[in-house]
Image (tube, rainbow, N blue to C red):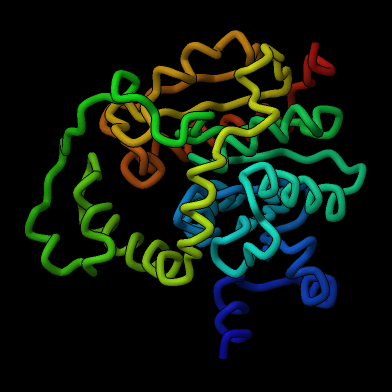
Length: 297
């Protein structure tokens, strides 16, 4: 039954890749699935969710757009990836780096990271600078597990739908309350993607990560430019991760489009889906058609 459900979630896989996917669904302790074929694009989700949320948010950007192999990972302690042997956030990063080494070897690839996944993606983009040809950071976290209050805007729900709250699973109600935009579509997407992730979450792993959050290779400790096409998308009303920290790093991304979306918080891909997808497609086009400035300085 679990195998059948995985097949349903991952969609159709071309016959010539079925055996490869069967053999490589878990690699270096990382569970993953792929969509499409072409340029590799590795996608890292945020905390307390799994790859289902990223598949839901990003796949519409590839409607009618061939040429990209999307590789959606479950990070350790989330989804189907175990946290065995993980004793710090640096261990999580090392396991992700091992996956990239094993799965992509010397191939060029791009990275997308949301929230905590964005923190990992920033570090990996420098570690694999010779291979990474593009980077997207969606409401990215940084070295503070809980950003100081002065970095965060006050929470505001700008589109309210309180009548929906009573029908939401209690495990999701606090997430619903944090939304800047509340509507039935977002509730359906939360129920379909975030609720299963919460049920599979390794809570002990989450507590440990909170105590060891800042990475030894934290990119804020040493100013290093990343010169490939970049997209940084932030929510103007994001009371979870804020937006001010990343604005201070704009010179570190000389090929970066920085967008702060009004009417959006930490769930901006759902709260402003049309604008988010337009920005993503613009970035995909830049990666395909524009050369990088070269290796990082």
